[in-house]
Length: 157
Image 1 (tube, rainbow, N blue to C red):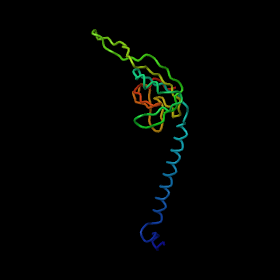
Image 2: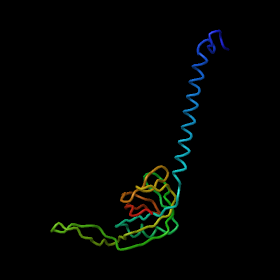
Image 3: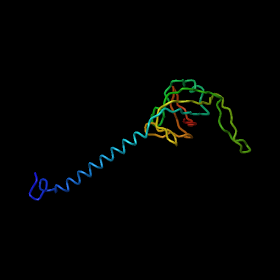
Image 4: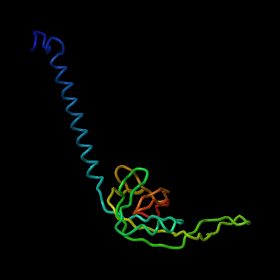
């Protein structure tokens, strides 16, 4: 296995081999330590999210119930369970002749505020769930109950 010159199989010097092997070992050890520390700092905790939609068809709102799963439509991520539903009069923003924005009621529509409880990694800029960050002010489409609703994330606590 070792020849007279100290080479392994006549190709690699044993001293060089030991140096390379120790560097690889040190790199793997450092990487595993860094990964372990990141996992500990990324603690999953419970959070509450408020989702708001100002114009939801009445028939969609009537198919959403407490306990329904709240899913991110685009990424199929389970955000959590619905714990509270507040319905109001549906509206949209309309511009007057003077250029002012006013709330204009919409017949057959409901405004919807949904409270969701879930688990994720809470950060200053929002919450991370399944590798995706959700932030206050994000406009998104969510699935819940038997419907799909386009709205905005209004709060994360």
